[in-house]
Image (cartoon, rainbow, N blue to C red; front, side, top):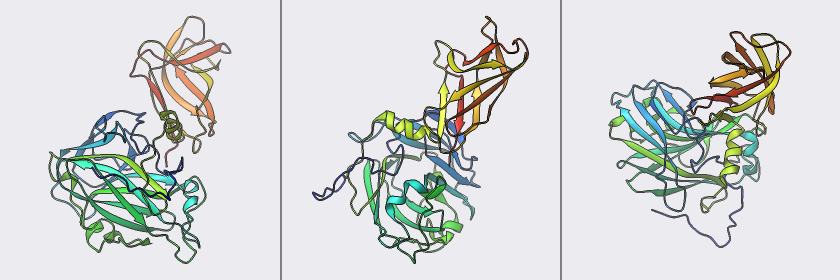
Length: 363
């Protein structure tokens, strides 16, 4: 395993890593999902890490796995090819990526005088020797740069310093809560993305054909595995040691984009208290643990029950979120019958690990 370079003049400041959940420690949705590949731009397991796939017959399993490099992270993200795709059409792609808000990137000063260098680093291993690409894609100005890296069966840290993008003053990152930078790992691509010349020197206006030139295919064989952890993006020309972060801090950062309440398997879990609007509909206010990136949508639920506090509990037939903002909203729960209008109501999850309710404000 290669270690980070050290420099006596570099201060490893707290909060320097612009990547969230780079240690792959938080996986609110699931620790493992099978049969992936037809899904477009989605988060499946490890928080903040999305898969973007285009027109491939390849399929894979995605897992949060306790196989990280010693002293860096106990966890890593694992991809396991389950269906090969050796006939690669021009427009095919498989990108593992994290989208980053513009307001979290202002420290870079991109696109203006005084713009800073940035350094990306990560730990990777695979089932064999592969060549893949790391790409930084500026979504605000359609500019990008790619760097090739190779894998072995052992954990290796790769480090890439990216030149400051001063440009002509016209390509700064937007200072808002929308996506400005995509941190992309290209592990499969067709000629639409590999038919040109890889852009490695500096940020340049995007040409799709130059984005992933020279990479191998993760889908070449069902024996293929890919492992990733310790991902870091920081200002400056040197890769400092991977920033260790308390799990509570990482979880709070992840909950800005996705928040899931899970049944605990032994007792009901309280969700919201409010009033029954009728014999079939009840409302209750639910507060999110952190301020979310935007007013979220209800992205799924199971095992939500309602009680009018009169020893009568009924399962829901529909759950929705109403009048939501970044801090909370009214949970609307519909049941078949049995509630009493204007009586105090409690919504909860059943005592099952399969019960959940989830809210998303993902980029």
